[in-house]
Image 1 (cartoon, rainbow, N blue to C red):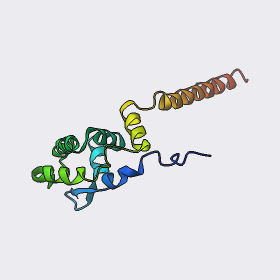
Image 2 (image 1 turned 30 degrees about the vertical axis):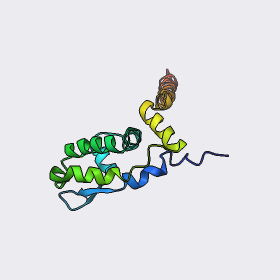
Image 3 (image 1 turned 180 degrees about the horizontal axis):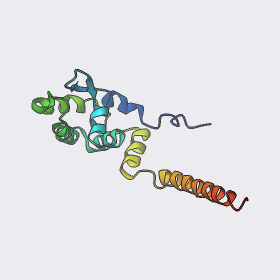
Image 4 (image 1 turned 60 degrees about the horizontal axis):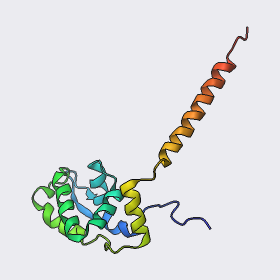
Length: 141
């Protein structure tokens, strides 16, 4: 039977946390944790997995540090500590299911070679295509 997580490989336990609002940006749009982490240049699922493994108190401190760096939501400048505390309550418990453990280990170590293999196959296809095009346009006079 096919893996049910093929289309959505991210643990559903992260959804409540990642889709929670951190406040409104200067244009009045709600900004989520997922968007905040992405705008900070972090992988939201990897960061969430790491926060879960830290435990609630350490996660709150780490989240507060991240939110303090985020400048798109004006309210975070003065209230990032409270918001970090509230958001850390939405994290799944550290004594996690196997999907959370898998996400944490995948987040920390990645899947070695998975994206590299895809790029290698694409490079080979590109080289073969170029060889075909150059070889095919030989001396036809």
